[in-house]
Image (cartoon, rainbow over all chains, first blue to last red; front, side, top):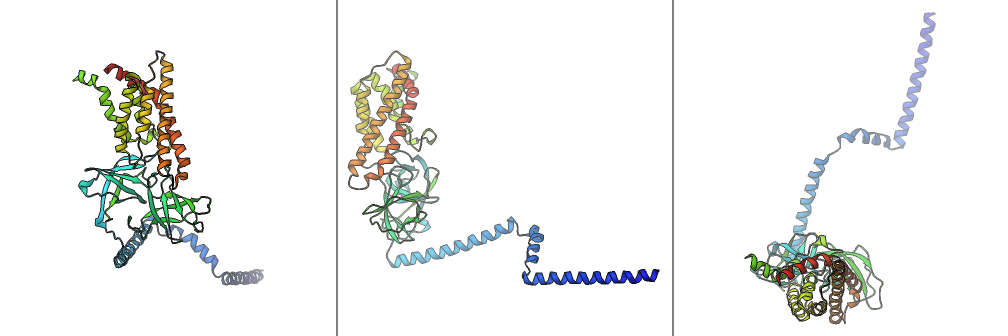
Length: 249
Length: 168
């Protein structure tokens, strides 16, 4: 009786082992044909708690920033060297004056800011003024202690700008609202919403490639010209500190 | 000293108009547009002292504000002079409600006149290029300014009128 039971148990175990072996083989075939995706997905879940955290991301981001800064500095040096060769305007870090905004009129007709640096500090009429984001305007007049800046969206402001993507010059005119108009004196300009507007590389009034704005909308094209609305990157209504660029004009 | 202050309070308050003009408090504005501050002072002054005084003060205010605004060749003077003369033709009413309503209405119309003058100057000076671009923003600016000036005028003008009467 005991022997019979032993023989029976052995057969069952033998069959079970065969079954397990068969399932294992099937699993191997699945892994082979799915190119290990099961393993990879499984690893995704079990490794999730150990992924690089915020700290490591910050370290990498800082390194990337430093790398970009170095590259940007190298490009700036190259640019200055080439501009010197072409006898175009150059700008260095020592050519800026930091100033605080002491009066701000960015509505209605008179769109201007008054800065706390004047002729005493070497500010000159016509100097470009930049803030976080890009170009804000140009110095219109100076007193001994202050200088008045005409903003880009003021109706009296007219600045030559450049669309890098289509390599085209245009005239940006303030209209007394927050969105100056950019005019191209041809109807065949391929400008699109989102195009980046900067100061012209060939400008004699402004340093080259200062960010100005982004094209917000394209008006209906007339027979002779194309007009677009520009969203300015520099926000004079929110800026308290600006940089006055000392450029020889 | 107190006597001196009381007597000259109207002149002293005149000095603060350019300061307000430069201060340009954003929280008092609509769509970046401010009330037309000089009218709040000009209206009670002209109503008390008459058209000729209104003309003179309008001229002085215009000269000061022109020197504070950038607009090369654009001026506040014609609008303010016209308002000064016009405001001087009104006499102060005894009915308090009518008087407050009148301050608002007169200042709103005055602001419309000054804004329109400024816009016409743009049209004339910039006639050959781009003047069509200014049309919609200009209307917006003028209307916002008219609304705000009319809104604040009853309160500010009545206060200033009291000050001017006391110092007369």
